[in-house]
Amino acid sequence: MTKRTIRVALLINDTPVPAVIREDGTYYDIYKRWLLQSLSTYPDPIIAKNTELIIDGYDVVDKREYPTEERLLPNAKDGYDAVILTGSKHTAHDSTNPFIPPLVSFMRRLTASPQYLHLKFIGICFGHQILSLALGGDCVSGQNGWEVGVYGCDLTEEGKKWWTWTGDQAEKKEVAGQGGDDRVYVEQMHRDHVPSLPPSCHLLLSTQRYPVHSFIKYYPASLPQNPVAQILTVQGHPEFTPEIVDHVIDARSATGIFDENVTKEARRRAGGKGHGGEGFGRVGWSVWRVLLQHIPVQDNNSIDQ
Image (cartoon, rainbow, N blue to C red; front, side, top):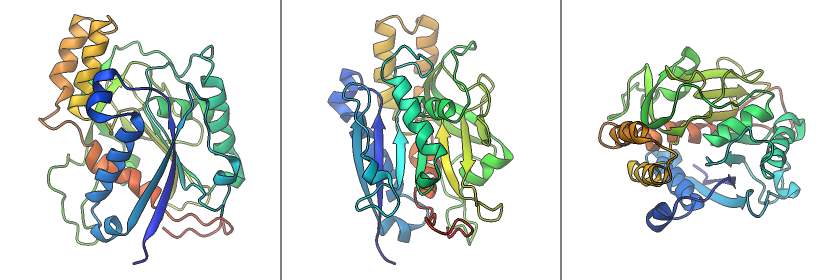
């Protein structure tokens, strides 16, 4: 198998709290580690062995950095295959925050223009919310309180196509240590949420508190028997470990963002069933499944996955 390189533009929307930086580095470090570790355990070991990740970080908050147009176009030298948006402490629907309107406009342009159809888009938490806004959807402050720590997200029928894994797909072998067919477990750190699906998107995950935890938008030429995703989002934080969540809880509790009851419940949930959620398992694998899709640039009538 020929070695394949996947190039990712990572739009970094925040800086971790100091304790996280000391132990885990910047969000660039955290996301790169998550992607590489998820790739290393990908259910197809041949793909895992023959895939190289190149990831470039862009500080869109303080430096207003964005990928150059040349690297976003199809067939470009060192051109990107995907754009990933990180989480953030910022409020996605706060149009007075100076970095947010340009970010929404940038993503709206990329996701709406035919010349960028070769790109895949992954949104994590704040990134999930920004993509909703860019696609004509919404993001609002949640009225059902915080979700912090590991929550079980219910799978829709469409979600089962993306979040249920059997390891060797041909032999239908189960992957040890993963959740069942009806739920996926993900670390959370949010109160803002997407209240309803953006146009032309499909719901994948939900919780009792908040209805839209993951959505997908298919490539225009995608077929039911061969689904190809252009956009995949997750409200949770698959890149977070229980230790990272604990540090964020400490910081937000100390500053009064979390009251005593929220803090207690967050600490109870942070470890999940002892090892956090499934971010480094089937959630990470599904992100890689999207990143690895082959989308032809010129021929929009056939898709080779």
